[in-house]
Length: 584
Image 1 (cartoon, one colour):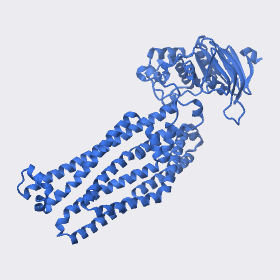
Image 2 (cartoon, helix red, strand yellow):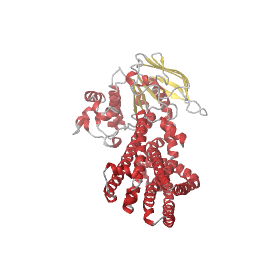
Image 3 (cartoon, rainbow, N blue to C red):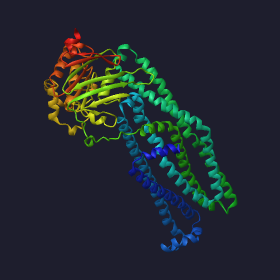
Image 4 (cartoon, helix red, strand yellow):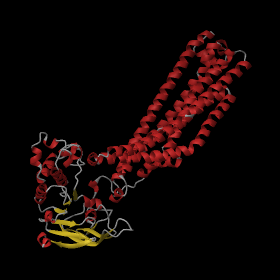
């Protein structure tokens, strides 16, 4: 666990580390406040029970002289005020410490979540297609909050609890050394025994919680994203059953950890009462009357009243830390993701020129060493400004070819050349600034038409004139102008309020807003009816010759206006030519 916490500490921002130093100082102040408040009960109870003894005590002489006190009765008021003052100040400092600890932990949690999200978004495409998105979502939405409450918050709690316990024990040691040693040994033994007995169980439940939290989120995603099929097939009961099984396992493990964390409290409370009762008995029979032991008993009782909840809180914090160890491991895996050499400021990137052609030279690619190559020694030249159609059976390599051209994946052999410049992982971002992608299923956020066309641009930075121009070129501006709110119309979740053709035109407008040189249509019209497909293709054909356009389609007729068409088969070009040449 210590090694994991060290790794987590490395991901915390420098200013937060400095804040932790300030927090540590506040912990020390809080421990001293506890020390003073518990020490103050001795003179307070002493002046109540035996004021004459306190008045004659050598430590009280300085206090008596400062306030010019002449009788023991006059000690009662200032001592009472001092005790009340120290108690209130101690409580106030503990509240400020709690507030600082909580704000500190949640601020770090927000930064860690953002760091995971940022690093995940910057990962290469091959990383994204190799893992389930629900794992990342579960970590950010569920496991990072667990790390906040079960790892980050307990660390300052344990540190401050240790300091406060040391302060309280120092007072108790001063009052009665034997009682302090016996109490410490008894309380510590109970916690150590429970920790040793529950160690394996805590680790097991931790793993179960980590696994089931991912599974629960995965089931939720699948059920809601496939709601049409769920409703049509009537599989609601099946999804509910699967969800309930995972949810029950998750909650059972969480309940077991909660029980393990809270169980020592009852034994500790009983032991504390037994020790105080025994102490009261032995002190009473050995002392000169019961009144003389009341200050000692009061201080010990107050110390126990403070120390027992702190011990229990420290143990709960430790149990929570161990219980969420698996969540911490999963969080660190994503935090340890390497960022690419470039950062998010694209303005510093030197854009690769694209004035002549795209050349794929002897390109070979395979997803797995045990699989046959998807593309094998593939060659193709695409002049700038041309319209290229791509057809082929499922699995022939169309999508892989597009991913290679877009710089999302790198070939195993061969080169992608843009005006003679080879594209690699190091400069793919510079090339991608030229590229726009219009897929079959356009992702639309539940926001305005304007925000969906200028997708990813903060609302206050959207160029409204550029949005309108892009909509005009995509042949959707006339439809938008008929709506009451025009470009401020909300499209609904995933564009549920738009037709298929309207979504595709929004996708085209989005590509045009980007001012890209190369627009790739990946089966963008395959889900449309014939008339709508013709309208969308007309919109594409009117885009102008300054754009290079690649169109993947199932039907050859869709590509009839292309400059040339290539047909893929077996990872290579099996046929290439104009539409009239291929239909004959």
